[in-house]
Image (tube, rainbow, N blue to C red):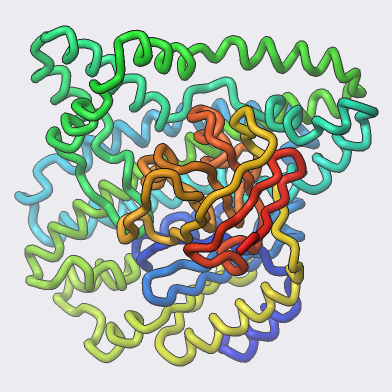
Length: 490
């Protein structure tokens, strides 16, 4: 499909957006996964538009189709649960596969390396496909479902609708971020007691080295990284640490509280089942994030091996497609210098008709990117900054200095600032722990920002759509933690 046809298709689509730092090669797996969704679902994306500019990703999608993708999961909950159960079995196999496929990577010949890389990428595409239906679940939960929930409430209950909705939607599963933190805190207790934690620290690093990976920065966290965290956490008393552990791992109360609240609110049976389904789908989102981070580690190990053999920069290979990587391994032919320079300026990666893809670079990509941004702004006109209250932090409102953070690896975020981001991912957690409050453009009540902010008891408003576009770093902002409204006060 040529550039003109793609822009026409963009202009005929109601556009939604998710964004963050990324490289082309590292975002290929989920987007090839989108192309395999029809294997599992009646509803799936026909169009997906990606713009990469200065290593910042704009993932633009058909918001109406996204709504249909999510709603089908609620309409047949038993089928959805069976699919999730089957997928989790495949997930365990995938993690084992990831450990095995890297064995002797530096010793195999080029043709075998190419075969192994191609096999891994196909496995990675496939494991992505099923959970991608929940990728933008906020388009349904924070619109139709929240409206239905709000309409079912009366009086004081209606005043607390956001808080009740957040409580009912909170997953009764410890996130992988929470699992790592609990495991680290247990090491902190041993360290404070004077015990030798050398072997335990090594095992912790082996288990969680991948937790800060994303679509741009893939790294192996070393023992020093985790030991520094242990020393920082050891400033707390043993009582404080044990209380923090109990708060994270004691998830039984979440389910108990959910059922008590459902009984109190007297919702109809259909709405009750939707509210029970929401945290289950939120858990699937967290599982999906874990395969992303761990899979990207394996992909990056392949990239490093190819770069070493072919004497090319790792960063340059990040601008390759998987087919470009295979051509480099097999034939020694990479991307031309001119095309590489064009891709570094801008990339547009487009999926159409669910199974066709197009790649544009340079000026053509910039033109498509501008069309996407223009169309998104047309579809999302609003001057008010308003979202969903994911966590009140026991407050009614809060004021502070805002800081926009699009790439946490490049930002010196300070204690007590209000974190404003397009959406958060695991690498944002150190900033979230320092934040006075959190505001995001995207994400729903089961998003990373919502779950982690509740675990940390940090005030958080999600899904504003325009916070990063309206607020500037250094602005004094006030957040109404009952209505989800954010105002710039000076």
